[in-house]
Length: 186
Image (cartoon, rainbow, N blue to C red; front, side, top):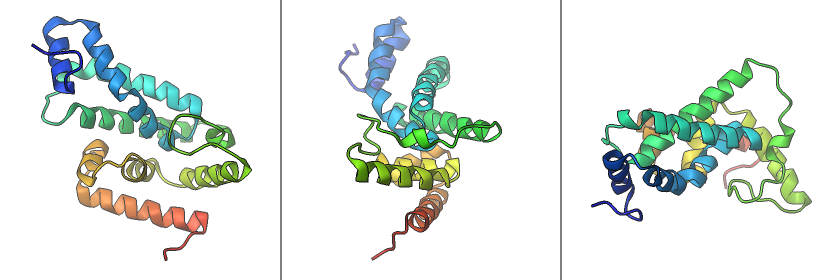
């Protein structure tokens, strides 16, 4: 019998067997912060990141019956998060928007860019501007590996690409970020 504090697979089993939302609430609650931390550096806007995070879980709930369990639940959910965020950025590029400078304002608690004094804010703005220069796919690759600490295999699965493609994306993203931020390899 699955337990509410068991692994993700047990929660999935509990929800599938009973249809009780408490299983799904616990499962999604475990992954909420991580999904938000994946989404924010891709979209670079607080309110959009919140909306997209919510959309990710709506999509996951609707698609749960199609989850084949050939990968971990977290990998499947991360793929939904990346795809949803990348799609959003692509759609947004087709419509007029503000310059996004509010994107990297003080955002306590998201764990992506630390908030703090003036120097930190200036650094946050520089990082945000540099990240905006990356394509959504490059942002996703660098976010999953450098910020979220996923392995290459996990990140490649979440991005729905080969590990070699992910390596290239991370390399390209780092190169662009170094150029934009004026940092050099030592």
